[in-house]
Amino acid sequence: MPPVRGPNAVDIALTVNGHAATAHLPSQRSLLELLRGELGLTGTKLVCNAGNCGACTVLVDDRPVYSCITLAVACEGKRVETIEGISKDGELHPVQEAFIDHDAYQCGFCTPGQVMSIVALLRSKAKPTEDEMRRAVTGNLCRCGAYVNIVKAGMSAARRGTK
Amino acid sequence: MSLFSYAKPRALGEALRLLKNGTIAIAGGTDLVGLIRSGLARPEGLVDLTGIDGLRGWTREKGKGLRIGALTPLADLETSPQLQKLAPMIAQSLRDAATPQLRNMGTVGGNLLQRNRCWYFRDEAVPCWLKGGTRCFAAEGENRYHAILGAAECVMVAPSDLAPALIAYDAEIEIASSIGRRTVKLGQLFVTPSGRQRKEHSIKKGELITSVRISDAALERRGTFLKAMDRKAWSFALVSVAASARIKDGKARDVRVVLGGVAPVPWWVPAAHKLLEGSALDDNSCLAAADLILASAQPLRDNGYKVTLARELIRRALRSLVA
Ligand SMILES: Cc1cc2nc3c(=O)[nH]c(=O)nc-3n(C[C@H](O)[C@H](O)[C@H](O)COP(=O)(O)OP(=O)(O)OC[C@H]3O[C@@H](n4cnc5c(N)ncnc54)[C@H](O)[C@@H]3O)c2cc1C
Ligand code: SF4
Ligand code: FES
Ligand code: FES
Image (cartoon, rainbow over all chains, first blue to last red):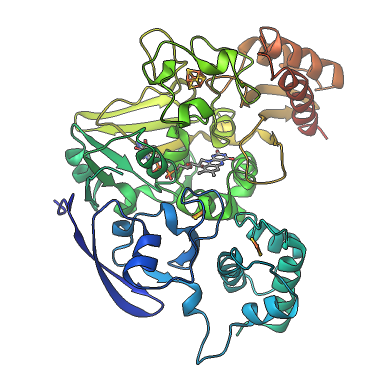
């Protein structure tokens, strides 16, 4: 039988942005709380806390998910990537560069989530159609309405290549 | 959120042993985590099913049909080119279900067993009939997203997009418990809340859905799934229609028309299937079938539009089978 863990705090070991990480948390805590509260990775944003907006999007084993409704304890052994993990050697990721070039945000609150959704798309499909790009960010609301430029930025990053 | 214990078994047998009083199964958690947060579910323990490898993925064997593991993420079904050919209504129904993130997380079993989206139900402060109270607040209140058909004490609607598509393939589900296994027609899983049954489906405590099966014969049908939403993405169906039929010499056989978003359960009318047997699915027969399906409609104050919408979606879905 597998161990039944909790209800009090449990140890959770996972990989975050390529590094081993551990946390000690009650089992009802979300992955978002683990990232922001325990690991200090505040790039991932908290807005609705209910799977209704996409601001908290991170990649778990390469797939975009809402970290606010993902239980931290369910991520034991998994590979998590956040907005902090995609730039290399101090250089912005090409998708981040493209967001700047195309003015793809106003307040910027949805941006980390939008970028993570596009990064995941471009990893699975280097040359997506515009429709695929648009569909990739349907799960990321932008209250400022920067959608047109978000899609433009994504397509431009795809053209330039993200390698 | 209340405290709960957590276990992630590797095998189905272990999961079934861990499911005792007070514990609830969790798959993608996309519905359950919200229900727990708002106090609508109060588990003492969660049994995470996502560690059980044998329940993920799908297989097709001639003679045995299509088998889809209950823990398969919705995204895997939506994006598989083979499956899009084999059972097109499944991918069509998932294309506009929720969002990419939710389809990565959400699973087949969880989608079928998700709870309804009535706003009075989701508001923990409202003690409505389904939650043990005495009144349905939607019946007299804000009900533009509620049922036009088949409701009793509770006028919520079946929210799943996948369920009508699977029912239009006559899908069966396999259910396991510590005392054995049973197979039921997916159409029979859903329950209209009424009388003492203040619930949405007939799964019992300690039971798990292990797979969905579709027969070879049903896979020969053409199928179309259409969904009307009040914006282009990220919303539940106002009305959805899954229509399927085997088309031979221009005539339809084994016709199925299953609706979501209109009744507390996925909705179909056997007499309409009979009416269309052998028809060429011309406009007139499609509309006659639609009228038969909607004959008992009793719209509420704000949802009469669903009757018009359903009639036209039924026509379009059926027509597309011969287009
Ligand atoms: C913002 C939002 C929008 C959405 N839009 C849509 C939409 O447009 N169309 C649509 O169809 N759905 C929609 N959904 C619902 C979503 O698809 C479901 O929440 C999801 O599919 C549930 O799957 P899950 O694996 O996350 O289930 P969980 O949340 O893990 O579980 C749901 C329920 O099923 C039970 N369960 C799960 N697996 C099993 C099993 N194998 N055996 C027995 N019991 C099990 C759990 O105990 C729980 O009671 C939406 C959800 C959200 C949050
Ligand atoms: S429709 Fe059902 S869930 Fe909604 S208020 Fe009425 S009884 Fe409650
Ligand atoms: S904060 Fe997670 S979806 Fe809104
Ligand atoms: S830039 Fe403000 S929410 Fe998107």
